[in-house]
Length: 348
Image (cartoon, rainbow, N blue to C red; front, side):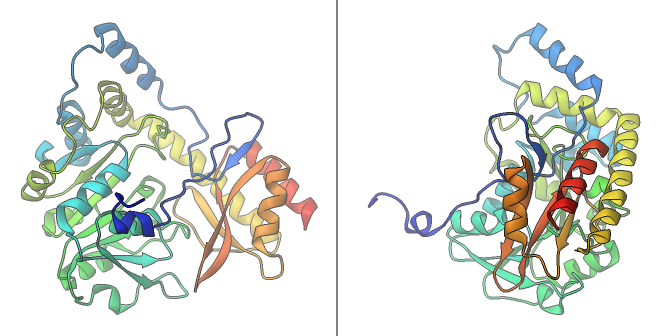
């Protein structure tokens, strides 16, 4: 393909988790919320449909920005919306990282980060987590051409968290902005939103896919100081969020009671999943997300994944060269987790 950029030809590309088109699977592989979203979401979508879709949506999604400001305790100008938090990550990469420059990320973590650097024609500097999933000092060290660092917090696949005080210390030592990817923060005990006011180098991105059960809608946002948001606006697509997603996301964010109830159910089932996996001999990291990372000292992970799939249970097999492999298991309903644990028990 002589017309394709060399960087694109060379990259493998990001591969999402399996999304089977036929039914009958228990899906515990892509960290989706197993419960329906707030009823307010459906009503908001109906309201938009009644008004019609013949006009462009608000390019800045002001309805959501105002609601987010109310919920998060910031001004609306501190919020920028995206077509899922992946769109926010893309906007940030394009804003800060030029061709040949460097994007830093921890390893193992969200594999899309590397792809974003490759698409940009940039380099990715992957800093290995310590065995306890803490970050070494090198993560904050200067680097040739270093322009941006990503920190998934909670991290995937581990579900572990770097405490906010340590995140602030990293940001102060880094010679570039630090984007804290909080896609799973609603399931955690801490978050870093309060750090944004303390440093213009800190950006915090959030997703409505996980804790708000809107993975099929595609909506995310970032909180940063207005001077930073102003530059990111220049990079985003003209209408990167559609009218349906803006209305639905705004309604979802407003329903705080629904979020609290849903979070409580997920956290309770997560506790049962961790206990069940440990009882089966797995080493399971304490998770603050809606999934767990599971490694068995004697049973190879890939055959377990393949047999579970044959039994129509999908989990995520992940292999990180230089680190190891394991199974990442999303928190489903209690019934789904019971079936998963029963099937796994019969296999071991």
